[in-house]
Image (tube, rainbow, N blue to C red; front, side):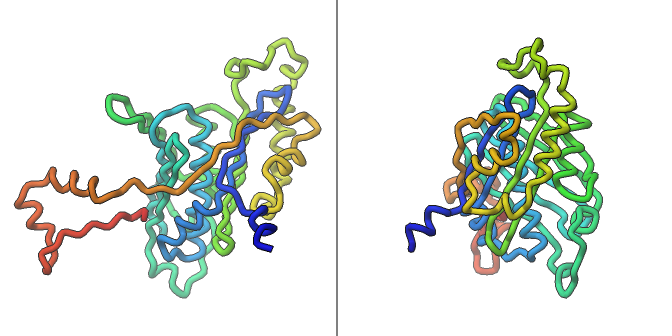
Length: 290
């Protein structure tokens, strides 16, 4: 019985894909143990837990669409009950995330599950940090949309000028989260795509069809551990032809450590250290992520 159950364990992985004879590329992200560890670190209200699951899955989908060595950071800052969320995805496939919220506003209150109600006014920032001696890339866009997917789609449409469609879902009770993203890539960026192909003229129609097919996906399918990523994608896009690329594993990891804390404390003067001490004479530190 245990072996049967383990064969359907929800994966932590990115499945990149493309739709044959089109310039549509995409990726399916599923989070199981990683999302569970994020939730176990905090006692989030259900709405906040859902939001952080969606943000984390979205961060992975956006990070995987980039070529970088370092870390991708997605952060929201706003005026609502959830005034900050941040997710960090490294090029090695490790991730962590955190949400800050006003617990009093969630006590004995049922708020609408929308960005205006939960986050309020603010912005969402996309940052690529490749370490020392490199320039940070950052894009910032207002939180415009009823959900996180719409906010990200607006950013790509306005700032990157790439048509993007995203589906996000998270189930805090079952501790599963997922994202399905497709993008209409510039023809010149796809080596295998021939401009003399008859599909070139059907660029817009191919994109519309892909969005319609993707929109038919149900949250239950995205979060179904018995439905393989390849099977789900084949169900959606088999008529046009589907090409799968190497699946990438994901793990939860927070890089905080005693050594890093010691290095940070060493940068302060003795007087500043003295001001940090508690009544017991201790200096304490708390990582909001873990």
